[in-house]
Amino acid sequence: MLISKVLKHTLFGVLLFILCSYADPKIFQESSSIKSRGNVSLQPNIAESAIDSLYELGPGDFLDIFLENAYFSVQVNPDQTIIIDEVGAIEVGGKPFFEAKKIILEKIGTRYDARYCYVQLSKLKSFKINVMGAVSNAGQFIIEPQTRLSTFFRNISGFLPVSDLENILLIRDNDSLRINLEEISREGKLEKDLILKQGDFFFVPYQEYTEVVTLALPTARKALAYKEGMTIRDYYVKAFGNNIENGGYLSLLVKDSSGTEKRVPVSSASVIKPTPGMEISFIDERGTNEFVYVGGAVAAMGKVPYNPDFKALDYIAASGVTPITGSWDQVRVVRGNRKTLDVNATEDAILPGDFIEIPKSTYESFKDFTMFLASLLTVVSSSFILYMNYK
Image (cartoon, rainbow, N blue to C red; front, side, top):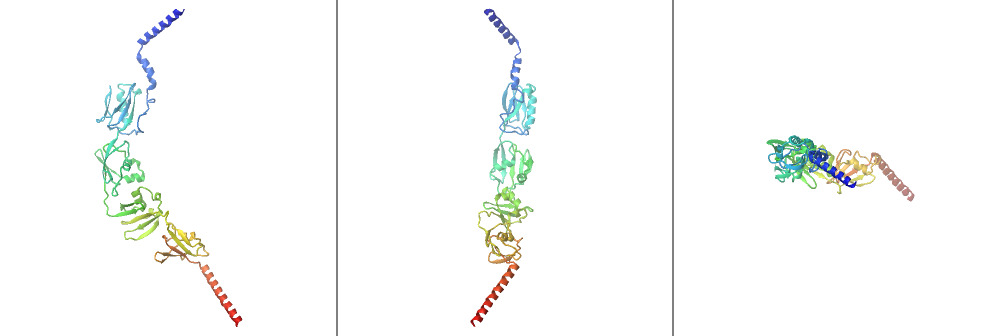
């Protein structure tokens, strides 16, 4: 019995070996590899970063090619082609990635089953950009792909004070484009913030101007070309790329070409339009010792911290005046070298160091006068009584 069982198993094994030898090997290859094929299982996993489908291929880019049972990387050659065995040369340079991918798959489909093929970008090319003109460092720069021009100019060492950022010249593919970098940065117009291409050349022109507006910060000073219609706020954004409020400034000292100065709150920056030769100083009163002094008919005479937005009435209210004891319709201000000014308590500006005098109200003045008369009569009558008693 045992021998017969061994013979049966041996005979079965021999028959199975004979069948396998004559069977088509593709059956086993197909069944063993189907699970590892297809676009679903071969998603990109090597690319350095998210890639825009409009990214334009060029020499230096690397593509990963997945064929039925093969995987390899190819580089875009200087002649704008890639080479695939048994397929030949395929021209992909200068084409958007989505278009090049479609062409490659069509070519591969003539030799391989396109259902089991895939194409992805694995490494993007770096390339050179040339910049000349009014920049801190002119010359050639190596940049990463998909870099926008605003990012590029922000990363290089910056512009000169005389740079004309509204008329930057871009030469690309024998064509000239005018770039307004300030418009892009101020208004966020992404559609004008171009992605740089290999071979781009920038020229930043110099500003030619004779009339300037000067902005003076505690830590910086910058002169800009005068432009009609621009406000102080516009000049500040153009010079420093930021909002005035972010600097913490509370007031402005405006000096025109004749040397006349006036101090205004920073809120006026959106209204005042500088004239040629004007200089605007931005003042931060935080931590300073500037005060306005208040005296007269107030509850608490003394000094009040200076606030550029305050008028005389604000300082009077801060010192505790009431309509019964004081009057603000005849407020006087002593400024500088003892110069006395009659001011409008609700409109005229007050400067640091001013002394505000609040006169008493008519009622209080009349009351004081009658009390004086009463006191005088009391003294006179008391004197008369003493005199008569003594006599």
